[in-house]
Length: 196
Image (tube, rainbow, N blue to C red):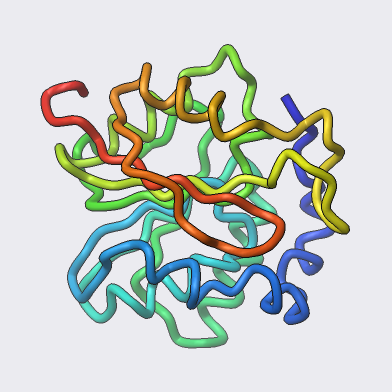
């Protein structure tokens, strides 16, 4: 398990320079999201992906912005207010594997650069599966295991094979890798019908 990101450094996660190697528009093309869809941004932080997700599902779609850090959610909602974005519902998760979100309520989930911070004994993947509708999708993004100029220490990083094994055990089927940038890998998962 890696260290949780320090909420005091939230603005680092919003640095426009990150777009060169972690572009929300390019990453989110892998999720089939349109108007009216419901999506969960799990471990949303200050909203690097949340606001672009909200734009994609607007005006009548919804983004559950889930985080364990209240300060991250506060920063996100400040940004949403500045941009007059009203279709984001902030969700404070008291535990990393218990989200106060209705079961089978989401068409899709995004788990971006946070799974390495999760306690390996938690049921995080099961909880993501619980909130997805049968047949829903989850795009999981993690730091590549090899050295990169930015990111967590290498000993905290997870191999794609380990992630696939853990998420398959939680009721997902890996649909394959997706290209998300030079420092990350992405895996698209489908929630297997009847496994919730």
